[in-house]
Length: 255
Image (cartoon, rainbow, N blue to C red):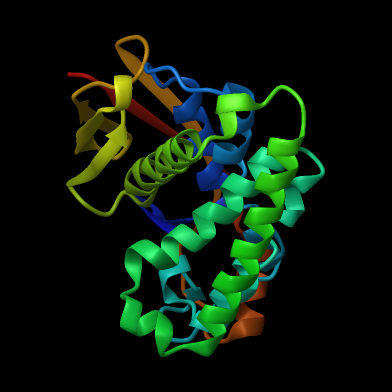
């Protein structure tokens, strides 16, 4: 769950809602990528593992709000990401592979090797997911019509694209900083692009250099607006049940 800063309070955005914003950004991406349909699906569903937790989020007594995604303990985070790929496997084997790689990539990018090795539960999660990824990759390569679409290079590029869209969406959905950066997003002919994102107001962000088609892009999300803090878990659940659904509109522009 994201806690989005808003003039009237806090907008609680579920992780799958933020992933939907990622998918909208992916659809407007100016640089070509293949296989497009499967990568778009994975971008839009990369947080599918959070669905059950978001229906009944845990309570943070320190904030009086549901836990934000960065506040969860490791065990809870691993439970969410374990089998995330399997949730989408029936739709697309490649999307399942990419969703799983996104989860393991979070631990590989944001945890040191020493941290990972000191936590058996993290090692067990990574091993199980790597085995699932190998199985999906084997299925794809033994299938028909995939070819270079499932080469090591193409899978890595797709994974890095999804990570870039994820980070860009997090910056604008959380709305807590004046600026942010997305480093080394894959770009034309094996290159990369570094994006700088600057907040203009509550709903407007400038992105340089401009990576989308057209001169501006509006993305839409959804959350629950809360203007108070809960005293306990039961109070939080009542607060969430009473919270109004809020449509979140974010405009990205080159100028």
